[in-house]
Length: 206
Image 1 (tube, helix red, strand yellow):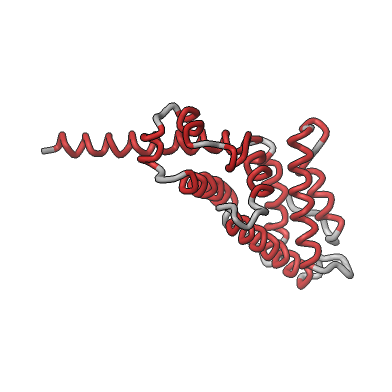
Image 2 (spheres, rainbow, N blue to C red; image 1 turned 120 degrees about the vertical axis):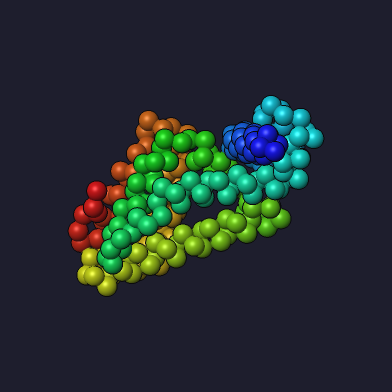
């Protein structure tokens, strides 16, 4: 009676590995050609699986895109969730710099975000709402950190937390595009740290 259970567990594990391989292949293909230009057949070939096999695991290209974005968010959450452990906001701001440094080690994900966020400006794109919500949430989180810094007397006089938060998000996105074009010429983490420290009265930790 144990053998069938072992077989099922082996099958489940094999299925999970196959799904992860498909997501990895889709991440790389979407980063190169975008969501709209990647076909189901190309995605299947990139994953080393048949078109039917791919659709067995992910019923549509849109479902696969959702899985790709969910994995990217999960990786960031696992690495950075809970990083802000103080009431000054400085921990969360330092985490932005660490994230930029970490992104320099994974160009395929930086490319994925740059390509898909541009594509998703079209309201009909399946990731449009995802990116609208993501940007809205990111700006709000950074603004909250800057507001805590202001309340702690650590934000420079005259700096508007909401406006500066949007400026920092724009800077991060712009740095990513420039870095993709010429990595040797762009220090994403260093440039971001310098900009954040311009609006603070103390250096960032770390």
